[in-house]
Length: 168
Image: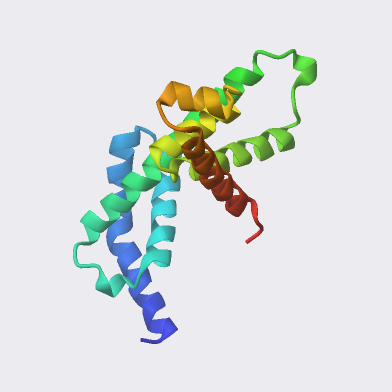
């Protein structure tokens, strides 16, 4: 199928389902502005995901994508809220610029994405090491696993962080 024909199908798909999706999101979010933003994010994923002609149940497909988009939206909001709460603990003179805050939030969201992609035990080992500053032997003792397993899990976590940090 030609690019022009695909564009026409996508436009038709968007016209047929955009209002429904935005209403569906507005019901769940209670905010028209957030619903408008997330419906656009959902349709961006539709474009990236597949040819719309192959979608057999459009509303079910859109609802599934929109649920993922909402989940990520809430996670980003939770991360931002936690960061701002921590920032409020410091004197105003230490407050970062708006640009620095945006960069930190973006980095935190990337770290969250990497960590959520790890197996739960690997993530737990990584967080105990990095946030609680436990040694490998302390982690092994706490979790009831040999130090060699702790090392292997840390290697997996660090590799995932490294790969995420590489320029695309």
